[in-house]
Image (cartoon, rainbow, N blue to C red):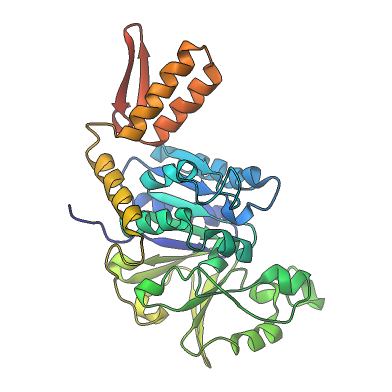
Length: 351
């Protein structure tokens, strides 16, 4: 079975629920085949008591802005390891395997790295991206995706000395070593406090940049701006109201909104083998789901198990559970049609 090219990666500098953010979501939706299946992952905000609402606000915004694409939207409550909502729970993460647009956003960069590094959630995300799914990363997730992650809260709020933490290194298999810095042009501090460079300020960030290995490039993304990295076409685009700044040692490049540039400007780019760095069992699961999505003639065993569970719930008149299971089945690409003769399944693309 032929594999797709890796999907687009969109990095938001901020404003994922603004007009500029809508333009980025719409650009991603246009690049994908129908049906549009979007997962919003809670992990970066999983330490917050209202993480479902934090991510839910973005999900509702995207659903509204992308209504012409009739998206299926799922919030993935992968919050904390060792709990019922663990990033290592296959049932929690299952919808990721049929998503073609995956969003991770606000929260804590260092928490996101701790919870996602080596997790089933992260492996599912990487596998789906290699098979063509787009990734949309904002705020904490943008930082966490780099080779090194900026510990914003630890430095800016707690007062730790400037330092970097290891990141998720999303683009290492593509030959790129990058440190992503959103809120590059932040000005919340006004005239009296420099809060640019993601609240580090120019002077402090200059010292921080000197701590990075010489081969690591800094990618600074302005607020209300998106950087689209498109591995398949080996190109990048800047969208929104600001620009992107690239730094490598003493060299600096400024790329304004509307600019397109070759991906090699980020480093010595290469396309990895499709399954590189992905556990074999995860890759097999991803390929099996991809076949089901492309040839939806027969629902897989997991779908049929959920159908049986729903029939049991209806027999017990547990309508709330039946509705929940119907929604889960729909998120996997199948619609349950209840008739006087019983229930039947139809591919969502026909519904």
